[in-house]
Image (cartoon, rainbow, N blue to C red; front, side, top):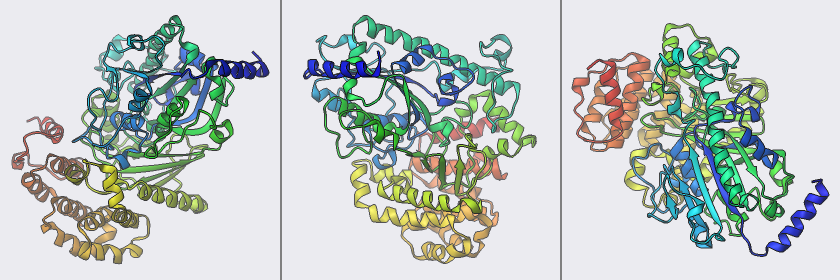
Length: 609
């Protein structure tokens, strides 16, 4: 069908449809970035059904999960709200955010039948039956009571989940891969070993398996005569699962495939020719607004995203979009605080806890042989700089030119010729985190105790305080001599959370911050346990003081499972990366349950207790 005939078909079809509404199907491959799909330039990873969708729709070259891990990414997707603003940025949740409504509930109010098969994994609380008519492994659009009723159906495919790479060493000898291990291209930050080659090849094989399952769903839509009434979205729920992918705010953790099949009966709602690609940037916050607009619903002001399809959403407008915002916070028991801004080919990363290495222990990650081998090789000192960086501290900010360095291994933040773009992106990101009232500038324990009743309202009420904390945190990116006076003032006279952040900045400066060591020492007696913990942490990095006795005392004294979790994160950091010994017998934690038990299991296993 040529372009003119296609256009006329769309116009005539639209006139005949009247008030008929489109259906929506989300087909989601878990733990899957663009780096493992042939459709996006990989040597392997063929997905014929997805490629057919692309011929009948639009491929997005720049689609992003705002968060690099399941529950955070899915909560963002389900709400259209940036997680650090909505209070659901931590994976897995210690407690659930309230006052958050998924946009599928708005579809249901419009008369849509909404079914989910079957993963939810949200970090916000909602009453049963609000989001879905049915959410189970048996859910289907075929269960709607009226065959004419429009529907939204979502199905997740777990065959490519991280756990598919949790195989024993003997598997590499007994199970051959279809993908030739000697032909896979190893990422430059990975060591080129038989283990990594096999792991890469095994994951490429997963692409074909999940594609077959996607094909089964598409066949059902076709059999039901629904395909040309249905927008089919195929995408990954966040980045790929090989080491330094899932959970980490690099492109490998955020850049996802997205292909949307455009149905002929609703092609008038899309200003794109089928079978094309777009370079315009979209992210998970945009999916909900897009579906609502296609369904003829207004987009709530509370949403952070912008529709990329629907009346008035032009191809030109989409092509002009070139920015995306990302975030990584706690990942199971491992803490971090990273914010990212990508603009065109440039990627800016703000590492607020850069003194923690990416490779800090996370029990579930290190079930993978490749993860464990990578760490072992680092300790043996046989890796090059790019392969070693995962286990080293990070600078407070990083800048990458993705056109020349797609795997983010050459940091340009110190390059004199790149200071202009660095300062531009730095200012833009700082404005962004202030603009969303980023709740991660309070420790998670405070958030659980005080914010979760209505996180967005709390952020609005405390916007000025959050902006002050952002500015204080940004002292880490100026020369220490310029920051010293403000740090000293914050440590001596600041509010509780100003003291908290001043300690974190001192940790980032390390030995350069010796001038404020007396002020840090005074905070070792601070009543607020989280400020005390940060002061102990900073003193160890500034003066090489053994932090373990004080950290154990804080963990034993706390009645909060989240506080204990934060403290034991720091214990693991100093034990594994600075060589301070932990006396497990000295731990006498009073909180009976919590994610901190992951750390206890790790300490006990590592000590053969």
